[in-house]
Amino acid sequence: MKVAGYRSLAVRTPDGLRIAAQDWARPGSGRDVLLIHGYSQSNLCWLKQCSGPLADEFRLVTYDIRGHGGSDKPLEAHFYSDAERWAGEIEAVIGAAQLDHPVLVFWSYAGRIALDYLSRRGHGGVSGLVFVSATSALDASMTGPAAPLLRHMTEGDLAANIEATTAFLQACTASALSGADLSFMLAYNMVVPPAIRAHLIRRAADYQAALQALTVPVLVMHGGADALILPSMGDYTVANTRNARHVIYPGIGHMPFWEIPEQFDRDLTDFLRDAPRPRR
Image 1 (cartoon, one colour):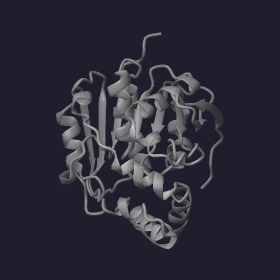
Image 2 (cartoon, one colour; image 1 turned 45 degrees about the vertical axis):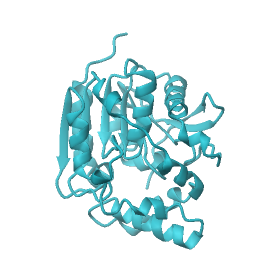
Image 3 (cartoon, rainbow, N blue to C red; image 1 turned 90 degrees about the vertical axis):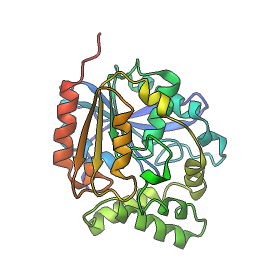
C-alpha cells in the first residue's frame, strides 16, 4: 500500500518510554484529530485514512502505543497495568504534537486507553470522542466468538502465535482480506512480543463512571457483523454517555475503517464538521 508522507514526532512518556508518532498534516488541513490503534496493531492500520482525502480536511496524528510498532517495548508488566501510564502516554503525544483540543478516534482495545486518559485527565482537553468498535466495559457477554483468539496470540511458540494472529486478522473483517493486506497486517502485528499482548489482556478496570461524566460529543461506530466486540458494546457506550451519535454498519466486521473506508470517512467527516470547535 502506498504511504503518504508524514512528519515523525519525538515523544517521551512521563515514565520514560519513547513513542513513535506521526503527523500527517497537509497544507490547509484543519482541526486536530488523534487516531489510536488497538491490540497488537500499529499506526499503519489507519493508512487508508491518512493517505486519503480525510487528511486533506483534517490534521491527522497517529502513534504506536507502548509495546507496539516503532515504540519502546519493555517486557515488565507494570508498564502496561497502570492506567496512569496510559493517560500519561496520550497526554505526551498531545503535547508533543501541540494538538489543540483534538477529537480522539480510538479503535477496539484503544477504548480502554482513551478511557484511562479520560478517567485521569478528564475531557476538558478534547473536543469530541469517536469509539470505533471500541471496548468500554469488561463484560464477556459483549465479546464475540473470535475474542478467545487474543489469548492464543500470547503463545510463546512462534508457529502457534503466527497461526492465532492470522486467524485474528481474518476475523477482523466480514469480507476476506486480500492476500497482500493480510501479509501487510501480519507483519506489523508480529512486531508485538507475546508477553506484552498478555499484559494487555490481564489488566482490569471499570470505565462506567468515566463514560457517564462525559459532556463532549460522542460518535459510536460499529460493524454489525463484528466477531470480536459485539455491537452490544456500542449500545452500552451510547447508554452510558450523553450527546452520543450511533452508527451501525450492517454486514461489516471489526475494522470498518479498512473494510468500507469511504463510508467510514464520510461519517467521521460529518461528525468532525459538526463537533464544536475549540475556543482559541
